[in-house]
Length: 155
Image (cartoon, rainbow, N blue to C red; front, side, top):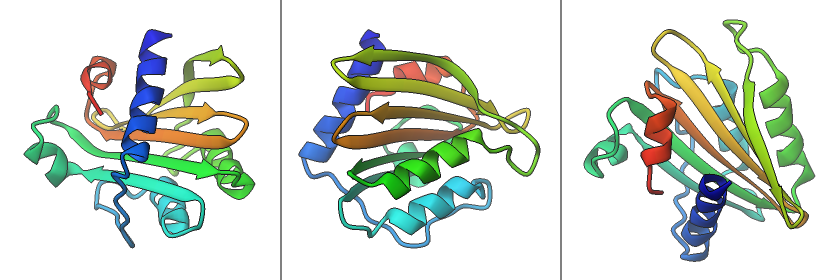
């Protein structure tokens, strides 16, 4: 629970500090999932704040090798965004791979749920969903990593 609170606090700090990166049409050859389409759909929407760290930025910051991208998206009162994310989490991808729920925690009306999906032998997708009454936030980590690599991140 401490880790989930730490991750959620990190999201808030990043967004409150106005570290917002807006990008248009970002995608990589490796990361061609429907998530990038969702990101591109909402990156310029009102009430949505985004942070994207791609592999070049992560390498420059000396993050763990193998992580291709980290997305952070925060939405205030956007039911459409929330529906798109939950639809994405419940869908199989083109390879027939589903997300597994790793766990969840609830505190003061906030539900945090952790999802993971092994896309190939070397590529995984981790998503943290924070669902509050007034906002909906996600962190998505994509690439070749172990779950311990996610714990070591200091976003």
